[in-house]
Amino acid sequence: MVDAALDAAAEHGLRNLSLTDVANQAGVTRGALLYYYEDLDAILVEAHAAGMRRVGEEREALVAQAAHPAEQLAIAIRAGLPSGPDDALMRLLYEFDVLAGKSPLHDELVQQLYGEQLGLYRRILAAGVESGDFALTGPLEDIAMNFVALEDAYGLHIVAGGSITVADAERAIALFARQAGAPLAVPRG
Image (cartoon, rainbow, N blue to C red):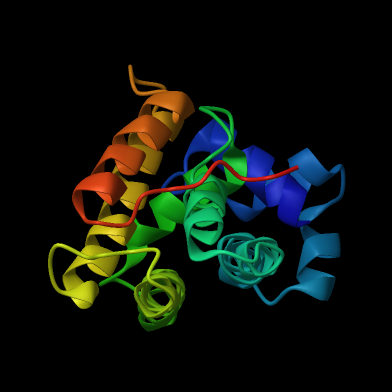
């Protein structure tokens, strides 16, 4: 159902999405969906959770495979960006940000995801300072917030299909990392 919701949301947009759109995409009836899900919002919460796993848990696992903070930072940046303009899951996550302020549940999920993103960058930066790999040029908290902001802003432009590519975003964020005193390593493997 998550894949059907993602495909239907990509086609119709989150604001115009209906339970019927998801059912049609999944090849089932509305009634069949309602047997398993209370309503469209329940399906969207599951889709939001899938996005959070990808940007949170799955990225944490990738980062944990690297031994050095500079490698971890490079992996975190790459894994936090969409794969390209057709990355339906990341597009949906950005659309969920629009729902923040209109739904207490989506407010909570958006804030939780932001906290996970920020926490990951904080930990990597702190480890880099401790190991001597990074010599931060400003407060760790501000630099971590900027990584999240850049990741989110560039990611939004990538899924919007504008002129910013994944490679452009990675290059620009790497430049910020060097300017902030946290130069990236080229990820191994």
